[in-house]
Amino acid sequence: MLSYHCLKETRPTHPRELNFKSRYHESMKMDYRLALIPPEGGSYALIFRCNHPRRVQIGKLGTVVTEPGYYVYCGTAFGSGGLRARIGRHLTLRRNKHWHIDYLRPFLKLERIWYSRAPHNLEHRWSDRLLDIAFVSGAAVLPLARFGASDCRCPTHLVRLPFRPDLQSLRFTEEGEPGVVEISWNT
Ligand SMILES: [Zn+2]
Image (cartoon, rainbow, N blue to C red; front, side, top):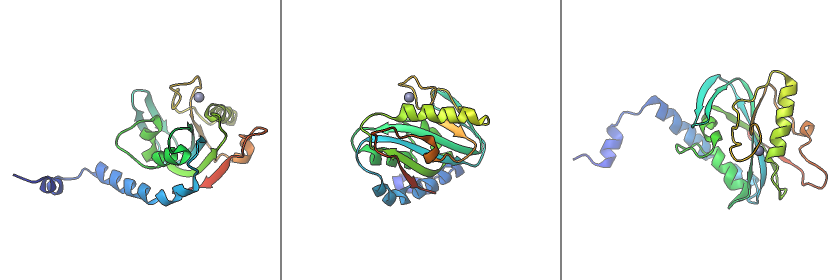
C-alpha cells in the first residue's frame, strides 16, 4: 500500500496548483511587514494594481472581468486581532474563500494599504467617495454590484479606477477623526 507521502510525491502537479503554491509562498514572505499595521480595530482600503484582463467567478455573486488599472477594496475590522489580523488574512492566498475579495486576490498586486483607527465604521463612506471619483473619471467602472457589500446598502465596496488613487485628494478624514495612514506595499 502506498503511504500518503508516496502518493503525494507521485501525484502529477497541475500547473495551476504550482502557480498557487509559488504565490502562496510569496505571500508568506510578506508577513514581517504586518507589524506595521496596528492590532486595533478600524477601517481599511487596499489599493491593488491589475495588469491583465481576466474573467474571475466571485462565488455565487457573479463574474468580474478585470481590466488593467487600479482596484480599491474597502473594509472594516473590529474583531479579534483588529486591522493586522484582517489585512494579514487578505494578504495570504487561501483555497477556502470567505470574502468576495478572496476570489480576486490572486490576480491583483497589492500596492498600498490605507487604514484608520477611528472607532466607527468608515468602509461605506470611503466606498461611496471612491465610487463618486470613479464615475467622474468616466473611464472607471463598478466591477460587480454588491461586491463586498452583502450586508449594507452600498452599490459596491470594490471600485476600479484608471489611475492610481491619491489619499490626499480623497478627503477620507473628517474633522475630529484620526488621520488615515498610508503604507506602500509594492509586492
Ligand atoms: Zn457599505
